[in-house]
Every structure is written in C-alpha cells, then in structure tokens.
Length: 96
Image (tube, rainbow, N blue to C red; front, side, top):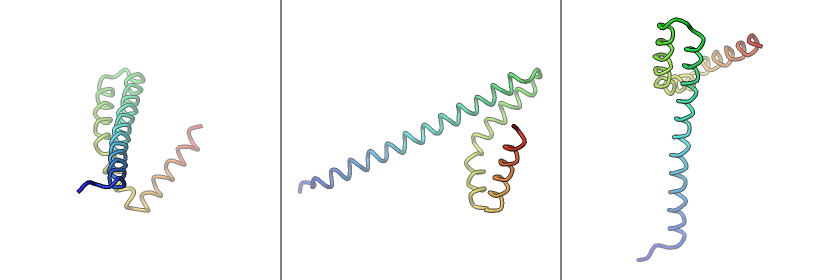
C-alpha cells in the first residue's frame, strides 16, 4: 500500500518543524554562551585582582547550568516571579 500524498506532506512538515526546533534550541544555547562570555570579559576587564577574575569565570559557568532550574522555579512560584520582576524594575529605575 502506497502512502497518500497528504501523509507524505504531513511527514515533511513534521520533519521541518522538528529541525526548526533543534536549530532554535542551538541558537539559544549559542546566545547564552556568548552573553556569559561577555560578562566574564567585562569582569576580567574591570578587575585587577586575579581572584575576582577566576571567581567570575566560575560563577558564569555555574549560572549557565543553573539558569534552567532557576527559571522553572520562578515560573512555578508567582510570589517569587513578582519579587524578581520588582527587583528588575527597581534596578531599571536606579541605574539611569
């Protein structure tokens, strides 16, 4: 029995969707690495102490691994989400 044309089109669409999701995930990971390296470079450039430079690299690597777990925790708890958003607003008003 030969598969119908609709089944072939649906399979092709599913494959494009799957590969699109893979590409988007890879792009997010690459952007995460780039921004982590950016913060490390900034910390290294602003400090004259070797210990501060090493600590910034370690913290950046740990945050890359912990970001998903922290995001899921904040997403599950509304009060923590409001606290985080309030903190971001406070920082936004204080910095300029």
